Length: 436
Image 1 (cartoon, rainbow, N blue to C red):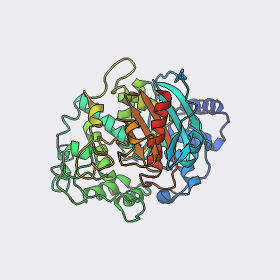
Image 2: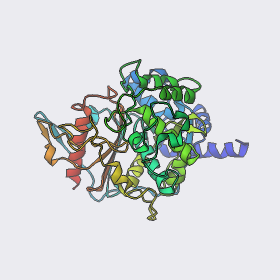
Image 3: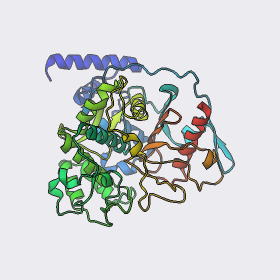
Image 4: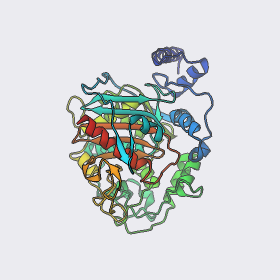
């Protein structure tokens, strides 16, 4: 970067900081310049938690770590476009309530119980309610965790539309020939994106020896790409492909790698090209990079502002169309993404239609839920949920023209569905009813 470019970057940082309400320190300015961002995210936290201990961070560390993920790891920037401000809804959300076992909870209760640090409700594309806490601002870049899987899913739809990916029935080895002779041979892209590959993967966030924990350790040291590739390439087959659903960040990483090989560019650059700039997102974002300008992680690592998370949800709600009507995604891609797999373990008494699609979740209030209001039969149907550990969410419901974004720091990475996830389902249904 030459001196003129540095000066322009610093000026942009100062302006963004003033808008956020506080002038950043020289140290913060230097950190912003190092990220190649157009504007500096705020707040700037001086002390960052140890990334090797991410799964066991304290609540306070989680807040700081999640809003500084773009600094915790090297990353590729995806640039924003010409945006227009989000307008306020004619009918703002003032209150919504749900009940569990005779106890009633309102919005204020909910944000405390969920450890919410950011929440956005968009009805008909307009802001019905926005909440920022724990020092977060409109410029804060919050990490997606596995919400990034849903972003990758959308990008796969764009690659199919462009012909970069011929068909979801293509074999993984057509794009990754070096995986011939491994457990991935014979697996289709559709099976990969639905997590029905049959390749064994231990996603246990509490087990320091799980495959996911090993992936996290790879990310905390140099040579990340080679480390993760060796881990994923060496996995064994557990079931015939297509028969059993089993959530796999290893498979999601591989899907991201396939997409990068098919498009010839890292995820961040493809995201910028296909929708971040054309759609008119308001801020730059950062994608966690395993090899800068070469490879970004497909399992997570997307970092963006609260309102841009919401704009992404609106893009999905509108079937992958730009504001000018240009269709970015393959025909019926969003509908296919919510065509839940009926493979074993996806279907249950609580979710008889299945729980997982193209890296989107079906998180309706379970049909078996007892002592809850809204009742399962009265709750929000046909919602697509992008979900990340510790409570990161984008909910899209096309029937209600509703998008809800939530940033959280749950005490557990993946609590029982009868805990925070159930309450989120109930609250989102209550919000839909309040705004209907």
